Amino acid sequence: MSESIASLAIMVTFEEIPSHLRLSYFVGEIVIRDSYAEHEARMLWNVLRKHEIVSTEYPRAFGGLLTQTRRALRHDRLSEEIRRVAFGVIESAAKWHRYRSDLVHDLLTTGWRQEGDDVHSVLNRNPPRPLRELERCADELRLVSYRFRGLWVVMPFWLGAPAEGWESAEDFRSWTRVAMGHIADDPLVMRGTPGPSPEPQGGWDAIVAAAVAAEELRVARRTALFSVDEGTH
Image (tube, rainbow, N blue to C red; front, side):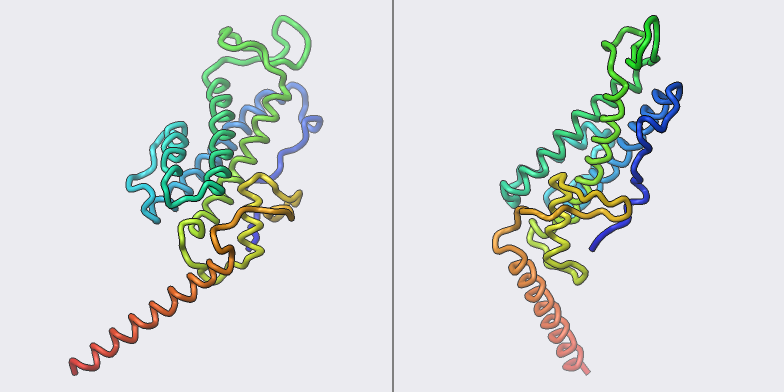
């Protein structure tokens, strides 16, 4: 399965933005990408809740959500391999979310009292920052969004869920590579680059076997139910 990423379209290049608009553009991109990252993190929380790793609604604040998700991922039903991938995503999200918070709670300007592209805090809350650093923050938050999506797509399989029909070994490995941050340079489709990726114990064959067992159990229960119904008439 591949997925359109039109909603997370690639930003224009630094040089394409008029210099007097760059600060407002990148601050806006940072806020938007942070919101996307938060949404995808909430999707991961919902998957963990569905599979009874957590039992509550997700925390309302993004920072709290990241902290609680990291704590939840220490559950013994999760292996160290997927935990390590997830922790990498959370650490990156926390770093750049803090950067975003510093920006939006400040009064910023460029070229203030001196020439150049550095972003200055009029309130002296933070030292000058290169404008390219804001561009990087927006890029990193976009990447975090992709990685969280990859995580919540593959997480059910790490928790023992059977395949549901649309998946293949290629899909699973591609989404795992996305979660790892190895994303193909394709403006239209989100997919991972070729390469190694961790798998649950038994690999994809075990996931397929779990799906077959689940279907056999469903059929057996349905057959038993029909047998009981016929016996009552």
